Length: 550
Image 1 (tube, one colour):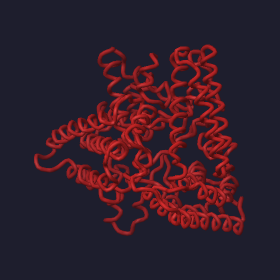
Image 2: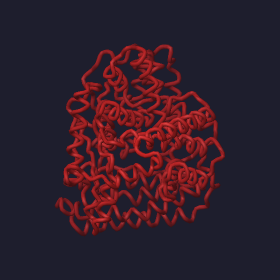
Image 3: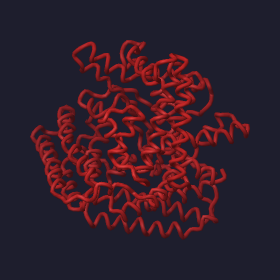
Image 4: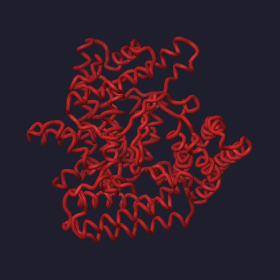
Protein backbone atom coordinates (compact mmCIF):
# COMPACT_ATOMS: atom_id res chain seq x y z
CA UNK A 1 0.00 0.00 0.00
CA UNK A 2 1.22 3.49 -0.77
CA UNK A 3 1.93 5.38 2.41
CA UNK A 4 1.74 9.16 2.83
CA UNK A 5 4.32 10.96 4.92
CA UNK A 6 4.16 9.71 8.50
CA UNK A 7 2.22 11.70 11.06
CA UNK A 8 3.40 10.76 14.54
CA UNK A 9 0.00 11.56 16.03
CA UNK A 10 -1.58 8.98 13.75
CA UNK A 11 0.92 6.15 14.08
CA UNK A 12 -0.33 3.14 16.10
CA UNK A 13 0.24 3.80 19.78
CA UNK A 14 0.99 0.66 21.79
CA UNK A 15 0.65 -3.10 21.23
CA UNK A 16 -3.16 -3.09 20.92
CA UNK A 17 -3.11 -0.39 18.25
CA UNK A 18 -0.36 -2.14 16.31
CA UNK A 19 -2.34 -5.38 16.47
CA UNK A 20 -5.44 -3.69 15.01
CA UNK A 21 -3.39 -2.08 12.25
CA UNK A 22 -1.77 -5.41 11.35
CA UNK A 23 -5.12 -7.23 11.33
CA UNK A 24 -6.65 -4.53 9.15
CA UNK A 25 -3.80 -4.57 6.66
CA UNK A 26 -3.90 -8.37 6.46
CA UNK A 27 -7.64 -8.35 5.83
CA UNK A 28 -7.32 -5.70 3.11
CA UNK A 29 -4.41 -7.38 1.34
CA UNK A 30 -6.03 -10.82 1.34
CA UNK A 31 -9.33 -9.36 0.16
CA UNK A 32 -7.65 -7.61 -2.77
CA UNK A 33 -5.71 -10.75 -3.68
CA UNK A 34 -8.91 -12.78 -3.64
CA UNK A 35 -10.97 -10.10 -5.41
CA UNK A 36 -8.52 -8.31 -7.73
CA UNK A 37 -11.28 -6.18 -9.28
CA UNK A 38 -11.65 -4.59 -5.85
CA UNK A 39 -7.91 -4.07 -5.56
CA UNK A 40 -7.87 -2.39 -8.96
CA UNK A 41 -10.74 -0.09 -8.01
CA UNK A 42 -8.86 0.90 -4.87
CA UNK A 43 -5.87 2.02 -6.91
CA UNK A 44 -3.63 -1.03 -6.89
CA UNK A 45 -2.62 -1.09 -10.53
CA UNK A 46 -1.06 -4.58 -10.38
CA UNK A 47 -4.60 -5.98 -10.29
CA UNK A 48 -5.89 -4.14 -13.37
CA UNK A 49 -5.76 -7.14 -15.69
CA UNK A 50 -7.03 -9.70 -13.21
CA UNK A 51 -10.56 -10.80 -12.38
CA UNK A 52 -11.75 -13.23 -9.75
CA UNK A 53 -13.84 -16.27 -10.66
CA UNK A 54 -16.86 -16.66 -8.36
CA UNK A 55 -17.11 -20.08 -6.75
CA UNK A 56 -18.10 -21.79 -3.52
CA UNK A 57 -14.40 -22.10 -2.74
CA UNK A 58 -13.81 -18.37 -3.20
CA UNK A 59 -16.79 -17.39 -1.06
CA UNK A 60 -15.92 -19.82 1.73
CA UNK A 61 -12.30 -18.63 1.80
CA UNK A 62 -13.43 -15.01 2.18
CA UNK A 63 -15.97 -16.01 4.83
CA UNK A 64 -13.21 -17.67 6.84
CA UNK A 65 -11.06 -14.54 6.58
CA UNK A 66 -13.95 -12.32 7.71
CA UNK A 67 -14.90 -14.55 10.65
CA UNK A 68 -11.31 -15.02 11.75
CA UNK A 69 -10.46 -11.33 11.54
CA UNK A 70 -13.66 -10.31 13.33
CA UNK A 71 -12.89 -12.61 16.25
CA UNK A 72 -9.31 -11.32 16.44
CA UNK A 73 -10.32 -7.65 16.32
CA UNK A 74 -13.04 -8.16 18.92
CA UNK A 75 -10.40 -9.76 21.14
CA UNK A 76 -8.49 -6.46 21.21
CA UNK A 77 -10.09 -4.44 23.99
CA UNK A 78 -11.31 -1.00 22.97
CA UNK A 79 -10.23 0.22 26.41
CA UNK A 80 -6.61 -0.21 25.28
CA UNK A 81 -7.16 2.18 22.37
CA UNK A 82 -7.63 5.91 22.05
CA UNK A 83 -8.40 8.43 19.35
CA UNK A 84 -7.42 7.34 15.86
CA UNK A 85 -6.48 3.85 16.99
CA UNK A 86 -9.96 3.44 18.45
CA UNK A 87 -11.46 4.71 15.17
CA UNK A 88 -9.48 2.19 13.10
CA UNK A 89 -10.84 -0.62 15.25
CA UNK A 90 -14.40 0.70 15.15
CA UNK A 91 -14.42 1.07 11.37
CA UNK A 92 -12.84 -2.35 10.87
CA UNK A 93 -15.43 -3.97 13.13
CA UNK A 94 -18.23 -2.34 11.13
CA UNK A 95 -16.81 -3.68 7.87
CA UNK A 96 -16.42 -7.20 9.25
CA UNK A 97 -19.85 -7.29 10.90
CA UNK A 98 -21.71 -6.11 7.82
CA UNK A 99 -19.80 -8.60 5.67
CA UNK A 100 -20.69 -11.36 8.14
CA UNK A 101 -24.37 -10.45 7.91
CA UNK A 102 -24.23 -10.42 4.11
CA UNK A 103 -22.83 -13.94 4.12
CA UNK A 104 -25.36 -15.12 6.70
CA UNK A 105 -28.17 -13.69 4.59
CA UNK A 106 -26.57 -15.15 1.46
CA UNK A 107 -27.04 -11.96 -0.50
CA UNK A 108 -24.51 -13.28 -3.02
CA UNK A 109 -26.95 -16.11 -3.84
CA UNK A 110 -30.11 -14.01 -3.89
CA UNK A 111 -29.03 -10.97 -5.91
CA UNK A 112 -28.06 -12.04 -9.43
CA UNK A 113 -27.92 -8.42 -10.58
CA UNK A 114 -24.99 -7.68 -8.27
CA UNK A 115 -22.79 -10.07 -10.24
CA UNK A 116 -23.77 -8.39 -13.53
CA UNK A 117 -22.95 -4.96 -12.11
CA UNK A 118 -19.59 -6.17 -10.82
CA UNK A 119 -18.72 -7.83 -14.11
CA UNK A 120 -19.55 -4.75 -16.16
CA UNK A 121 -17.92 -2.52 -13.55
CA UNK A 122 -14.63 -4.39 -13.87
CA UNK A 123 -14.38 -3.19 -17.48
CA UNK A 124 -16.14 0.13 -17.01
CA UNK A 125 -13.73 1.37 -14.33
CA UNK A 126 -10.70 0.81 -16.57
CA UNK A 127 -12.37 2.55 -19.50
CA UNK A 128 -13.46 5.54 -17.41
CA UNK A 129 -10.01 5.97 -15.91
CA UNK A 130 -8.41 6.18 -19.37
CA UNK A 131 -11.33 7.39 -21.50
CA UNK A 132 -9.18 9.78 -23.57
CA UNK A 133 -6.78 7.04 -24.60
CA UNK A 134 -7.26 3.36 -23.77
CA UNK A 135 -3.73 2.44 -24.85
CA UNK A 136 -2.31 2.02 -21.30
CA UNK A 137 -5.08 -0.41 -20.31
CA UNK A 138 -5.99 -2.05 -23.63
CA UNK A 139 -4.39 -5.37 -22.68
CA UNK A 140 -5.89 -5.20 -19.18
CA UNK A 141 -9.35 -4.65 -20.65
CA UNK A 142 -8.81 -7.54 -23.07
CA UNK A 143 -7.70 -9.73 -20.18
CA UNK A 144 -10.86 -8.96 -18.23
CA UNK A 145 -13.07 -9.43 -21.27
CA UNK A 146 -11.57 -12.89 -21.71
CA UNK A 147 -12.40 -13.76 -18.10
CA UNK A 148 -16.02 -12.55 -18.13
CA UNK A 149 -17.59 -15.82 -19.43
CA UNK A 150 -16.04 -17.86 -16.61
CA UNK A 151 -16.93 -15.13 -14.12
CA UNK A 152 -20.61 -15.20 -15.06
CA UNK A 153 -20.74 -18.98 -15.23
CA UNK A 154 -19.30 -19.19 -11.73
CA UNK A 155 -21.73 -16.58 -10.46
CA UNK A 156 -24.70 -18.45 -11.92
CA UNK A 157 -23.64 -21.61 -10.07
CA UNK A 158 -23.88 -19.74 -6.76
CA UNK A 159 -27.44 -18.48 -7.19
CA UNK A 160 -30.32 -19.80 -5.08
CA UNK A 161 -33.89 -18.46 -4.78
CA UNK A 162 -33.19 -14.96 -6.11
CA UNK A 163 -35.38 -12.08 -4.98
CA UNK A 164 -38.04 -11.67 -7.73
CA UNK A 165 -37.36 -7.95 -8.15
CA UNK A 166 -33.62 -8.50 -8.42
CA UNK A 167 -34.19 -11.25 -10.96
CA UNK A 168 -36.13 -8.73 -13.06
CA UNK A 169 -33.48 -6.01 -12.77
CA UNK A 170 -30.88 -8.58 -13.81
CA UNK A 171 -32.60 -8.93 -17.17
CA UNK A 172 -32.44 -5.16 -17.73
CA UNK A 173 -28.75 -5.05 -16.83
CA UNK A 174 -27.96 -8.03 -19.04
CA UNK A 175 -29.79 -6.44 -21.95
CA UNK A 176 -27.66 -3.32 -21.58
CA UNK A 177 -24.31 -5.13 -21.55
CA UNK A 178 -23.79 -5.26 -25.35
CA UNK A 179 -24.06 -1.46 -25.50
CA UNK A 180 -20.91 -1.14 -23.38
CA UNK A 181 -19.00 -3.57 -25.57
CA UNK A 182 -20.14 -1.86 -28.76
CA UNK A 183 -19.09 1.49 -27.31
CA UNK A 184 -15.53 0.45 -26.49
CA UNK A 185 -14.78 -1.48 -29.69
CA UNK A 186 -13.54 1.43 -31.83
CA UNK A 187 -11.54 3.13 -29.03
CA UNK A 188 -9.81 -0.18 -28.30
CA UNK A 189 -9.00 -0.76 -31.97
CA UNK A 190 -7.61 2.78 -32.16
CA UNK A 191 -4.94 1.88 -29.61
CA UNK A 192 -3.28 -0.50 -32.07
CA UNK A 193 -2.77 -2.93 -29.20
CA UNK A 194 -5.47 -5.42 -30.18
CA UNK A 195 -6.10 -7.06 -33.53
CA UNK A 196 -9.62 -6.70 -34.84
CA UNK A 197 -10.33 -10.43 -35.01
CA UNK A 198 -9.09 -11.01 -31.47
CA UNK A 199 -11.09 -8.10 -30.08
CA UNK A 200 -14.28 -9.07 -31.89
CA UNK A 201 -13.97 -12.61 -30.58
CA UNK A 202 -13.58 -11.32 -27.02
CA UNK A 203 -16.51 -8.92 -27.32
CA UNK A 204 -18.80 -11.49 -28.90
CA UNK A 205 -17.96 -14.07 -26.24
CA UNK A 206 -18.58 -11.55 -23.47
CA UNK A 207 -21.93 -10.46 -24.94
CA UNK A 208 -22.98 -14.08 -25.34
CA UNK A 209 -21.97 -14.82 -21.74
CA UNK A 210 -24.25 -12.08 -20.42
CA UNK A 211 -27.11 -13.36 -22.57
CA UNK A 212 -26.65 -16.91 -21.29
CA UNK A 213 -26.43 -15.65 -17.70
CA UNK A 214 -29.75 -13.87 -18.12
CA UNK A 215 -31.36 -17.06 -19.43
CA UNK A 216 -30.02 -19.10 -16.51
CA UNK A 217 -31.24 -16.56 -13.98
CA UNK A 218 -34.69 -16.62 -15.59
CA UNK A 219 -34.89 -20.38 -15.05
CA UNK A 220 -34.03 -20.29 -11.34
CA UNK A 221 -36.98 -20.53 -8.96
CA UNK A 222 -37.43 -17.18 -7.24
CA UNK A 223 -37.92 -16.46 -3.57
CA UNK A 224 -40.67 -14.36 -2.00
CA UNK A 225 -41.45 -10.81 -3.24
CA UNK A 226 -40.35 -9.11 0.02
CA UNK A 227 -37.20 -11.16 0.49
CA UNK A 228 -35.21 -7.99 -0.19
CA UNK A 229 -36.33 -6.59 3.19
CA UNK A 230 -33.83 -6.91 6.03
CA UNK A 231 -36.29 -6.83 8.91
CA UNK A 232 -36.24 -4.42 11.83
CA UNK A 233 -33.47 -6.01 13.92
CA UNK A 234 -30.94 -6.33 11.11
CA UNK A 235 -31.82 -2.91 9.71
CA UNK A 236 -31.20 -1.28 13.09
CA UNK A 237 -27.92 -3.17 13.39
CA UNK A 238 -26.94 -1.92 9.95
CA UNK A 239 -27.76 1.66 10.97
CA UNK A 240 -25.28 1.28 13.83
CA UNK A 241 -22.51 -0.08 11.63
CA UNK A 242 -23.02 2.09 8.53
CA UNK A 243 -24.41 5.34 9.91
CA UNK A 244 -23.02 5.31 13.44
CA UNK A 245 -26.61 5.67 14.69
CA UNK A 246 -27.63 3.85 17.86
CA UNK A 247 -31.31 4.57 17.21
CA UNK A 248 -34.34 2.43 16.48
CA UNK A 249 -36.07 2.32 13.11
CA UNK A 250 -39.07 3.99 14.74
CA UNK A 251 -36.85 6.87 15.88
CA UNK A 252 -35.42 7.17 12.36
CA UNK A 253 -38.93 7.28 10.89
CA UNK A 254 -39.97 9.97 13.36
CA UNK A 255 -36.86 11.96 12.51
CA UNK A 256 -37.65 11.66 8.80
CA UNK A 257 -41.21 12.88 9.30
CA UNK A 258 -39.96 15.83 11.34
CA UNK A 259 -37.53 16.77 8.58
CA UNK A 260 -40.22 16.48 5.90
CA UNK A 261 -42.56 18.83 7.80
CA UNK A 262 -39.77 21.32 8.53
CA UNK A 263 -38.46 21.38 4.96
CA UNK A 264 -41.93 21.70 3.44
CA UNK A 265 -42.60 24.76 5.62
CA UNK A 266 -39.26 26.32 4.64
CA UNK A 267 -39.96 25.61 0.96
CA UNK A 268 -43.35 27.31 1.10
CA UNK A 269 -41.82 30.38 2.72
CA UNK A 270 -39.01 30.52 0.17
CA UNK A 271 -41.38 29.97 -2.76
CA UNK A 272 -43.60 32.82 -1.57
CA UNK A 273 -40.72 35.20 -2.33
CA UNK A 274 -41.20 34.37 -6.02
CA UNK A 275 -44.96 33.94 -6.28
CA UNK A 276 -47.88 33.66 -3.86
CA UNK A 277 -49.61 31.14 -6.13
CA UNK A 278 -47.00 28.98 -7.85
CA UNK A 279 -45.74 25.82 -6.19
CA UNK A 280 -42.00 25.37 -5.52
CA UNK A 281 -41.69 22.72 -8.22
CA UNK A 282 -43.31 25.00 -10.81
CA UNK A 283 -40.91 27.82 -9.93
CA UNK A 284 -37.89 25.56 -10.34
CA UNK A 285 -39.17 24.05 -13.59
CA UNK A 286 -39.67 27.53 -15.03
CA UNK A 287 -36.19 28.61 -13.92
CA UNK A 288 -34.64 25.51 -15.48
CA UNK A 289 -36.48 26.05 -18.76
CA UNK A 290 -35.31 29.67 -18.92
CA UNK A 291 -31.68 28.87 -18.06
CA UNK A 292 -28.86 28.77 -20.60
CA UNK A 293 -25.09 28.50 -20.05
CA UNK A 294 -23.56 31.97 -19.83
CA UNK A 295 -20.43 30.85 -21.66
CA UNK A 296 -22.25 29.48 -24.69
CA UNK A 297 -21.72 25.75 -24.31
CA UNK A 298 -22.08 23.42 -21.34
CA UNK A 299 -18.48 22.23 -21.14
CA UNK A 300 -17.15 25.80 -21.02
CA UNK A 301 -19.76 26.59 -18.37
CA UNK A 302 -18.66 23.69 -16.17
CA UNK A 303 -14.95 24.47 -16.62
CA UNK A 304 -15.51 28.11 -15.68
CA UNK A 305 -17.84 27.39 -12.77
CA UNK A 306 -15.64 24.65 -11.32
CA UNK A 307 -12.75 27.10 -11.19
CA UNK A 308 -14.87 29.98 -9.94
CA UNK A 309 -16.55 27.97 -7.19
CA UNK A 310 -13.18 26.64 -6.02
CA UNK A 311 -11.65 30.13 -6.00
CA UNK A 312 -14.63 31.58 -4.14
CA UNK A 313 -14.28 28.93 -1.45
CA UNK A 314 -10.56 29.64 -1.24
CA UNK A 315 -11.27 33.34 -0.73
CA UNK A 316 -13.89 32.54 1.89
CA UNK A 317 -11.15 30.56 3.70
CA UNK A 318 -13.54 28.06 5.25
CA UNK A 319 -11.83 24.81 4.26
CA UNK A 320 -8.29 23.74 3.35
CA UNK A 321 -7.59 22.43 -0.13
CA UNK A 322 -5.50 19.28 -0.74
CA UNK A 323 -1.98 19.58 -2.13
CA UNK A 324 -0.78 17.59 -5.13
CA UNK A 325 -4.21 16.54 -6.37
CA UNK A 326 -5.55 17.12 -9.87
CA UNK A 327 -9.10 17.59 -11.10
CA UNK A 328 -9.90 17.30 -14.79
CA UNK A 329 -13.16 18.65 -16.20
CA UNK A 330 -13.83 16.66 -19.35
CA UNK A 331 -16.62 15.90 -21.80
CA UNK A 332 -17.94 12.37 -21.72
CA UNK A 333 -16.54 10.64 -24.83
CA UNK A 334 -19.08 10.01 -27.58
CA UNK A 335 -18.83 6.27 -27.11
CA UNK A 336 -19.75 6.59 -23.43
CA UNK A 337 -22.57 9.15 -23.54
CA UNK A 338 -25.30 6.70 -22.56
CA UNK A 339 -23.32 5.34 -19.62
CA UNK A 340 -23.39 8.63 -17.67
CA UNK A 341 -25.93 11.05 -16.16
CA UNK A 342 -25.73 14.79 -16.90
CA UNK A 343 -22.60 15.19 -14.79
CA UNK A 344 -20.62 12.78 -12.64
CA UNK A 345 -17.37 12.46 -10.74
CA UNK A 346 -14.84 9.62 -10.94
CA UNK A 347 -12.62 9.55 -7.87
CA UNK A 348 -9.06 8.24 -7.66
CA UNK A 349 -8.59 5.00 -5.74
CA UNK A 350 -7.76 5.21 -2.07
CA UNK A 351 -4.30 3.74 -2.76
CA UNK A 352 -3.60 5.60 -6.01
CA UNK A 353 -0.27 7.41 -5.79
CA UNK A 354 -1.52 10.17 -8.06
CA UNK A 355 -4.79 11.61 -6.81
CA UNK A 356 -6.46 12.60 -10.07
CA UNK A 357 -10.23 12.89 -10.26
CA UNK A 358 -12.37 13.47 -13.33
CA UNK A 359 -15.48 15.63 -13.41
CA UNK A 360 -17.44 14.40 -16.42
CA UNK A 361 -19.84 16.62 -18.36
CA UNK A 362 -22.38 14.81 -20.54
CA UNK A 363 -23.85 17.27 -23.02
CA UNK A 364 -26.57 15.24 -24.73
CA UNK A 365 -27.85 18.36 -26.48
CA UNK A 366 -25.07 17.77 -29.02
CA UNK A 367 -26.84 14.58 -30.09
CA UNK A 368 -30.33 16.08 -30.53
CA UNK A 369 -31.79 17.12 -33.88
CA UNK A 370 -34.19 19.94 -33.02
CA UNK A 371 -33.78 23.16 -31.07
CA UNK A 372 -36.54 22.10 -28.69
CA UNK A 373 -34.82 18.81 -27.93
CA UNK A 374 -31.47 20.54 -27.44
CA UNK A 375 -33.00 23.08 -25.06
CA UNK A 376 -34.63 20.29 -23.05
CA UNK A 377 -31.27 18.56 -22.59
CA UNK A 378 -29.52 21.79 -21.59
CA UNK A 379 -32.18 22.51 -18.96
CA UNK A 380 -31.25 19.24 -17.23
CA UNK A 381 -27.98 20.94 -16.21
CA UNK A 382 -29.71 23.79 -14.37
CA UNK A 383 -27.89 24.49 -11.10
CA UNK A 384 -24.30 24.18 -12.31
CA UNK A 385 -22.77 26.05 -9.31
CA UNK A 386 -24.38 23.59 -6.88
CA UNK A 387 -23.23 20.64 -9.00
CA UNK A 388 -19.66 21.97 -9.04
CA UNK A 389 -19.63 22.48 -5.27
CA UNK A 390 -21.03 18.97 -4.83
CA UNK A 391 -18.81 17.04 -7.24
CA UNK A 392 -15.57 19.04 -7.35
CA UNK A 393 -14.39 21.61 -4.78
CA UNK A 394 -15.06 21.45 -1.89
CA UNK A 395 -17.24 18.37 -2.50
CA UNK A 396 -16.41 14.83 -3.53
CA UNK A 397 -13.03 15.56 -5.10
CA UNK A 398 -11.64 17.56 -2.20
CA UNK A 399 -13.04 15.15 0.39
CA UNK A 400 -11.83 11.94 -1.25
CA UNK A 401 -8.39 13.33 -2.06
CA UNK A 402 -8.05 14.37 1.59
CA UNK A 403 -9.29 11.01 2.90
CA UNK A 404 -7.05 9.11 0.48
CA UNK A 405 -4.01 10.69 2.09
CA UNK A 406 -4.88 9.56 5.60
CA UNK A 407 -1.75 8.06 7.20
CA UNK A 408 -3.61 4.87 8.16
CA UNK A 409 -3.95 2.56 5.13
CA UNK A 410 -6.71 0.80 7.04
CA UNK A 411 -8.71 4.01 7.41
CA UNK A 412 -8.39 4.78 3.71
CA UNK A 413 -10.17 1.51 2.89
CA UNK A 414 -13.49 2.65 4.37
CA UNK A 415 -16.00 4.85 2.55
CA UNK A 416 -19.25 5.41 4.45
CA UNK A 417 -21.92 7.22 2.45
CA UNK A 418 -23.18 9.00 5.58
CA UNK A 419 -19.92 10.95 5.50
CA UNK A 420 -19.17 11.50 1.82
CA UNK A 421 -22.75 12.24 0.79
CA UNK A 422 -23.43 14.25 3.94
CA UNK A 423 -20.32 16.30 3.22
CA UNK A 424 -21.38 17.14 -0.34
CA UNK A 425 -24.80 18.33 0.79
CA UNK A 426 -23.05 20.46 3.41
CA UNK A 427 -20.90 21.91 0.60
CA UNK A 428 -24.04 22.87 -1.32
CA UNK A 429 -25.36 24.56 1.82
CA UNK A 430 -22.11 26.49 2.35
CA UNK A 431 -22.16 27.57 -1.30
CA UNK A 432 -25.54 29.22 -0.72
CA UNK A 433 -24.74 30.63 2.73
CA UNK A 434 -21.45 32.21 1.61
CA UNK A 435 -22.73 33.59 -1.68
CA UNK A 436 -20.73 31.20 -3.85
CA UNK A 437 -23.94 30.01 -5.46
CA UNK A 438 -25.83 33.18 -6.36
CA UNK A 439 -28.52 31.62 -8.52
CA UNK A 440 -31.80 33.31 -7.68
CA UNK A 441 -33.46 29.97 -6.90
CA UNK A 442 -30.41 28.40 -5.20
CA UNK A 443 -31.96 28.17 -1.73
CA UNK A 444 -35.28 26.90 -3.06
CA UNK A 445 -33.47 24.26 -5.10
CA UNK A 446 -31.48 23.26 -2.02
CA UNK A 447 -34.69 22.78 -0.04
CA UNK A 448 -36.35 20.88 -2.91
CA UNK A 449 -33.50 18.37 -3.01
CA UNK A 450 -33.50 18.11 0.79
CA UNK A 451 -37.21 17.22 0.76
CA UNK A 452 -36.56 14.38 -1.69
CA UNK A 453 -33.81 13.07 0.58
CA UNK A 454 -36.00 13.37 3.67
CA UNK A 455 -38.57 11.15 1.98
CA UNK A 456 -35.76 8.69 1.30
CA UNK A 457 -35.50 8.19 5.06
CA UNK A 458 -39.18 7.24 5.22
CA UNK A 459 -38.98 4.87 2.27
CA UNK A 460 -35.69 3.27 3.36
CA UNK A 461 -37.06 2.53 6.83
CA UNK A 462 -40.43 1.44 5.48
CA UNK A 463 -39.00 -1.06 3.01
CA UNK A 464 -36.54 -2.69 5.38
CA UNK A 465 -38.00 -2.28 8.86
CA UNK A 466 -41.70 -1.75 8.21
CA UNK A 467 -44.53 -2.90 6.01
CA UNK A 468 -43.94 -0.69 2.98
CA UNK A 469 -44.23 -2.66 -0.25
CA UNK A 470 -42.32 -2.03 -3.45
CA UNK A 471 -45.42 -0.56 -5.10
CA UNK A 472 -46.15 1.52 -2.01
CA UNK A 473 -42.62 2.94 -2.11
CA UNK A 474 -42.95 3.83 -5.79
CA UNK A 475 -46.28 5.58 -5.22
CA UNK A 476 -44.85 7.44 -2.21
CA UNK A 477 -42.11 9.01 -4.33
CA UNK A 478 -44.53 9.81 -7.14
CA UNK A 479 -46.98 11.51 -4.77
CA UNK A 480 -44.65 13.34 -2.40
CA UNK A 481 -41.60 14.09 -4.56
CA UNK A 482 -43.15 14.33 -8.02
CA UNK A 483 -41.12 11.56 -9.63
CA UNK A 484 -42.33 9.88 -12.78
CA UNK A 485 -43.08 6.18 -12.36
CA UNK A 486 -39.92 5.27 -14.23
CA UNK A 487 -37.69 7.39 -12.04
CA UNK A 488 -39.46 6.23 -8.87
CA UNK A 489 -39.02 2.58 -9.84
CA UNK A 490 -35.35 3.15 -10.58
CA UNK A 491 -34.85 4.73 -7.18
CA UNK A 492 -36.75 2.03 -5.29
CA UNK A 493 -34.87 -0.73 -7.13
CA UNK A 494 -31.71 0.77 -5.67
CA UNK A 495 -33.22 1.22 -2.19
CA UNK A 496 -34.07 -2.48 -1.96
CA UNK A 497 -30.46 -3.51 -2.62
CA UNK A 498 -28.66 -0.81 -0.59
CA UNK A 499 -30.38 -0.52 2.82
CA UNK A 500 -29.38 2.58 4.87
CA UNK A 501 -27.56 4.19 1.93
CA UNK A 502 -30.54 6.23 0.61
CA UNK A 503 -31.27 7.64 4.07
CA UNK A 504 -27.59 8.41 4.68
CA UNK A 505 -27.50 11.51 2.43
CA UNK A 506 -29.63 13.88 4.48
CA UNK A 507 -28.78 12.20 7.77
CA UNK A 508 -25.12 12.82 6.99
CA UNK A 509 -25.71 16.49 6.33
CA UNK A 510 -27.76 16.87 9.51
CA UNK A 511 -24.94 15.23 11.47
CA UNK A 512 -22.46 17.74 10.04
CA UNK A 513 -24.69 20.68 10.98
CA UNK A 514 -25.43 19.24 14.44
CA UNK A 515 -21.74 18.93 15.32
CA UNK A 516 -21.06 22.31 13.72
CA UNK A 517 -23.49 23.95 16.15
CA UNK A 518 -21.55 22.49 19.06
CA UNK A 519 -18.05 23.19 17.74
CA UNK A 520 -18.55 26.50 15.91
CA UNK A 521 -21.74 28.21 17.04
CA UNK A 522 -21.32 27.30 20.71
CA UNK A 523 -17.66 26.31 20.98
CA UNK A 524 -16.06 29.26 19.23
CA UNK A 525 -14.22 27.34 16.51
CA UNK A 526 -13.79 28.96 13.11
CA UNK A 527 -15.66 27.22 10.31
CA UNK A 528 -12.35 26.39 8.62
CA UNK A 529 -11.04 24.71 11.76
CA UNK A 530 -14.24 22.69 11.99
CA UNK A 531 -14.30 21.60 8.34
CA UNK A 532 -10.62 20.64 8.38
CA UNK A 533 -11.07 18.75 11.64
CA UNK A 534 -14.00 16.79 10.22
CA UNK A 535 -12.19 15.94 6.98
CA UNK A 536 -9.05 14.77 8.79
CA UNK A 537 -10.64 11.51 9.95
CA UNK A 538 -11.37 9.92 6.59
CA UNK A 539 -14.72 8.73 5.32
CA UNK A 540 -16.37 7.32 8.44
CA UNK A 541 -19.57 8.10 10.40
CA UNK A 542 -19.53 11.45 12.15
CA UNK A 543 -20.74 10.01 15.45
CA UNK A 544 -17.70 7.77 15.71
CA UNK A 545 -15.51 10.84 15.38
CA UNK A 546 -17.33 12.38 18.34
CA UNK A 547 -17.03 9.16 20.33
CA UNK A 548 -13.28 8.99 19.72
CA UNK A 549 -12.77 12.10 21.84
CA UNK A 550 -10.50 13.73 19.25
